[in-house]
Image (cartoon, rainbow, N blue to C red; front, side, top):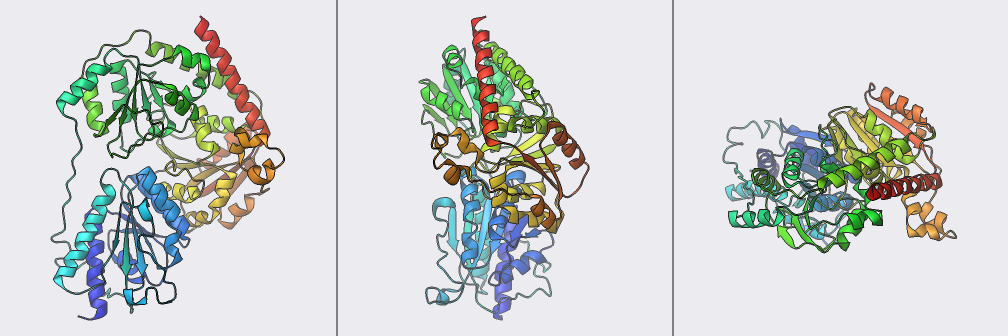
Length: 578
């Protein structure tokens, strides 16, 4: 068997096994050393491929697909620094538990560490940011090596999908010539799909005695459910049923899905971030128990409040990742969330008196203050952008949320809606890079898709817009342009005026109309409330890439936020004295 025939059989066996194990899409960064893998992926009749010339963008584009679909996605690049550009996306995938299968082509062993071009040490390149790393063997034509290739195809998908989910890295050393044999296609030959490894999954459950003890301890207690970003689909309804049975409120992070899963329910508290900024509220509302699902919510006031509590705290963590930055856990529950919630909804509980009703009353009062505050003035402030977006998002839409101020404003200003809006964000490493690309990746799964992003984050990833132009992707981007790092105006750094603008404010004075023109996007710049509403209405009927740039003022934005919090604090204090 020739070198090319051997390489073709080996790599096609690996690729076929990836697909049999559940891979449906791959994102490819062009390069020479990865040629045989790229060509064979393109040749496969069922694998959907996307080609992104910017590796950093490609990494986040794949992440966005996997985040929106919950399916494993393959990422492929050539040797050298190309792989290093995947690092930010790999780190985010690891921390947010997203299944990526990263394939890096490499020089063969005889060309390593000898000064060969485009060769560097790629072994353990991503360190502990991947769940597994394999330096694959050089292709050989024996049956044993074909079984080896298939075995690693199945194994890589299995590891990526096993709780906690995450990225895996396989490094492929390949010798020249690099062109595989595509005629006849290796994927139409008899026997190619036979003998693939079937993977069966189970869920961790709790013994009945442990369930009985937990439920007994919860019964009749004044408790709260904390719902952060959730890893599983369609848990919202079960969480609501569990809260109703217990008579507890759910403090729902926007990424939990509970604020926008198609129904409104009064057990869902969406104003807790503002309420918990108030000391009088904290003193009046003292829980006896906390049960937390999902990753840690974005709210800083919630985190500070949880740190102040000395109560029984259950953290439901199926992946044994110990996601507890507060370090207040007293009971770590390693089991499947769906299993636990189903058991909760079937159990009987004593309900604490006048507990849930107080939360509901104060939450409703805070909502009224927020609604009234949003109607003040015609010039847009950043909270109003979220409020307007909430009203104009179509049912069954997706919203990707940028880090820094956008995710915090969504937490504060996005009240419950009876529309279905799937909210996504990169809340693993919480970086402002790669957000445009991740949103574009998600847009291939969810439609219509919107992105709310700050100006610096948008600038970081403008290269990613090429994928929208290339594949005619549909995405409406709302760029909140406050001319720099707006979040720093809320932080202690704002108290250092001598260096604040140069080191933290970092004004860029950018006009994004030029970026829109470069990538054939529709573009509008708005400063007033009515103009934003009109722009969103027009974008809803326009295909392709839409960029709406909203100009705001950092200093005025701080004042608007503080005014809202002061109004809410006064209203809470009035309500508590009634």
